[in-house]
Length: 118
Image 1 (tube, rainbow, N blue to C red):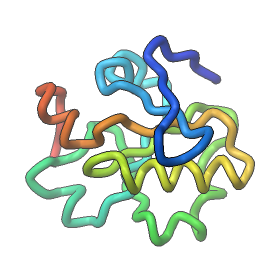
Image 2 (image 1 turned 90 degrees about the vertical axis):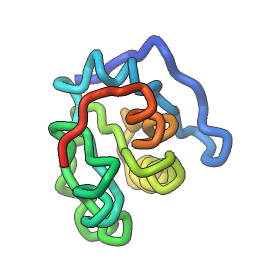
Image 3 (image 1 turned 180 degrees about the horizontal axis):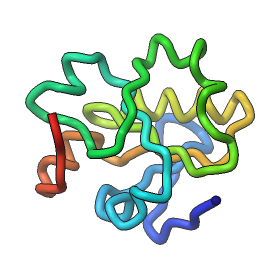
Image 4 (image 1 turned 180 degrees about the vertical axis):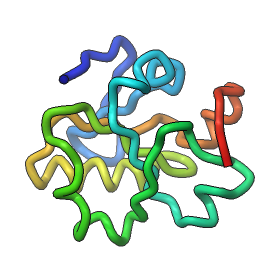
């Protein structure tokens, strides 16, 4: 399933990577694959993680990218949006087309008081 998000903007640091607003992701999170690329201690730390997100540490992404479906939208998540934009760029370079970066990462997600779990 390929989604068309209302709130999309190109990431300023990675050409072709589209940022998705946290509130927009909240509306469709059950229809996408969410991959958190932070370290395990961050995933379970004070910022928590988005319910349903799967942990795939950025450094291990090259070894595990093939585990992600190519027929669903994939949203990458990190603390502030930098590592996840890098992950999205890497996925796109390896044939994934419907890839997004969570704008502002978990910092903005928490600032907006959206649901998390530890």
